[in-house]
Image 1 (tube, rainbow, N blue to C red):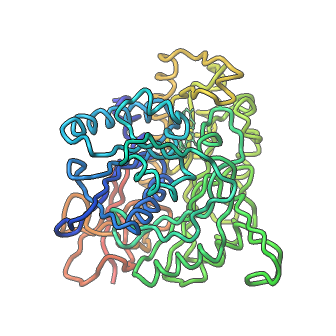
Image 2 (cartoon, rainbow, N blue to C red; image 1 turned 90 degrees about the vertical axis):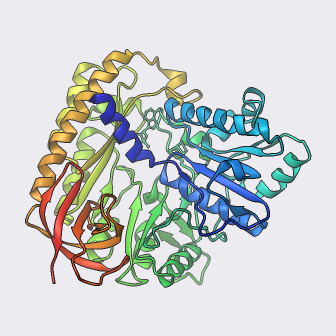
Image 3 (tube, rainbow, N blue to C red; image 1 turned 30 degrees about the vertical axis):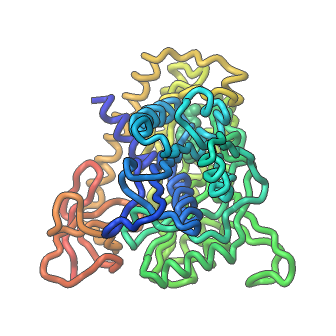
Length: 477
Ligand code: 5AD
Ligand code: SF4
């Protein structure tokens, strides 16, 4: 039960691995296959990679057996994520044995973390490319074709891929991710991201607006602005500044500009750091109907002492005050979180504090993880990973059970309410039903009936029932 649950949440957080889609017959010429793991940012990076390769004349294939270049965009955040990648590399390897000209490349955070080690250890890797080096992929591929082992894991202070129009992979044509910044300057002691994705840098706001505007023109109706820490988005402008004459574009101003593209375009964002989310952002959210009332605000732990050891730079009280502020300004706002259990030195009292914080906040959704020590991080250097595996497991199961209880309660509270839902497509279970999300990011399923609605339409749905993760309703006229 607990195993299943933790896997379920892991998958939700990490998303399902997806592969390059193909529409119709596969064209002749060189083909690439790409598989992605990890966060939404990584998935969006694969769309950037697809764009770079298509410009070079490559087309996507959805079967790696047919590909000239097989790429795997990897995550390094927990050991388990890396193990999954190793298993996949073994599968690619068995095809490569029969077809030695096939190139296998590792992209993303694991490439950055392990660098050339990947070439030495995993003998069947031909390419290793870090998150800031995707523009050099064509050159690296040519090098690998002529027998060189190709590695580029240089991190950059400037690269934002601002001018690259991502090729939307596995798209429903309605919702899309748009990266607004890269890297992270927070030094949470547990986290490998500052080492794999480098320094924080914000993308030119005009290129973000162009991308979002273009998506809207093409029929998309929801954009999720992505960054490791969106609230520290900041783009200095030389005068004359775009819109307003001030010297910088903050996250609140960027949100406002994206929301102003059209009231029919929903705007979401992820992820916020509790220390950085400002009242200005909250008021901007409240002001625009099309900025979704949903915030992912990772707490990590309910114990101030553990938070300090994690270098989160806020206390339990500070975090709870932020929640209070969000609810004062937007009482209907959905709130989700990330929790790590079993971090170094975590006692039973610390664990109880996490449970009691959850009781106070009552999250709509939570992604819950056992601490996994990552080599090179500050925690790995400073502290002993001293909570036994069994204890971590038990604490995680308690956290998961409590979250399930809260979630069930919160889902029930939605019964009887009416929400505006953006139709994303057929429900997974039946082509007779539509599915889409409400403002608070909850999945809603409802019968199509005989009304001629389509993907991308907004409909009013009255909620009549719920399951653990889905609201079930009916369309209103
Ligand atoms: N061990 C377990 N979970 C981690 N996360 C980040 N680093 C680790 C780690 N070393 C979790 C955090 C973060 C989410 C993306 O992954 O909760 O918010
Ligand atoms: Fe994303 Fe972090 Fe995993 Fe890299 S390590 S893919 S940034 S979750």
